Amino acid sequence: MASVNQDFTEDIKKFISVNEILQVRIMDDPNSPTSYSRINDIVEGKLVIAWPTHHGTRMLARRDQMLTFFIMRGDEPHEFGGLVDELDYSAKLPQITIIPGSSIIRIQRRQNFRIKALIPIEIVAQMIETKEDSSSTIALQTTSYDLSAGGIAIIHPKRFPENTPMEIKLALPDGGPMIKLPCRVVYSDALAENPALHRTGICYLMITERERARIVRYVYRTQLKRLHP
Image 1: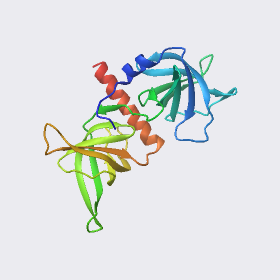
Image 2: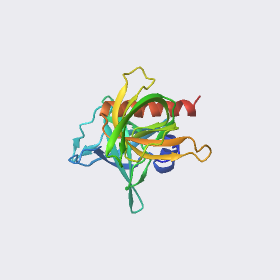
Image 3: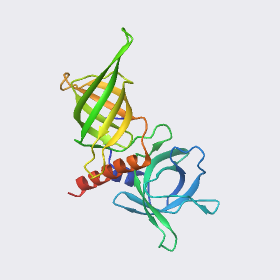
C-alpha cells in the first residue's frame, strides 16, 4: 500500500472519457474470457458502461462482482479494478454501473483507492521469534489509519516485522457484520514526526467478493461525502 491517498473522481477525470473502449475480465479468474465494452456515461465517479460482450455473448455479470478493466494509452496497456454496482436491463442497450476500486496504472501493480478512516479493529498477530525458533501471540484493539479494498494501515507503538501473519476483525459502520480476514504485514515504519509510533501496512490474504464489495462501497461513499459535504 502506498502512503498517498487517492481520489477516484480525479483519477477517472484524468484518464477516462465517455465513448472510451474497455476490455473487461472477471477479477482473479484466469479462465475469464476478455469481453469488450464502451463507457456510456460518468456520474459522480461511477462508470456507466455498455454490458460487456465476448463474441456477441454477454458477460455473466452480477451485483457486487469485482471486474478488471483494461485501456490503452498510446502503446501502453493500463488497468484498474471496479465493482459492479447496478445492472440495468431496462435500457434499450443493457448497461452496468461500475464503482472504480483502484487507480488506473500501467500493467504492473494495481493500487487500490484508500481513504483516511478511523474504524475499530481487533488484531491477533503471530510474532515469530527467530533466535528461539518460537512464536508468541499478541492481541490488541485499535483503530485503522486508512482503508482500501486491498488492505489497511494502523498507527501503533508496536512495530511488527514484515510478513508477520495476522487475523483482523474490521467493524465497518455500515450496519453489516464484522469482517474477519487473514492478513500479513507489508511494512512497519517509525513515523518521522514521532518515532515512538509506527505506521503498519497490512494486506488481506483472503477476502470474499461480498466482503470486498462492502469495503469498496464504504470507500466510495466516504469519498463522495468528502467531495460533497
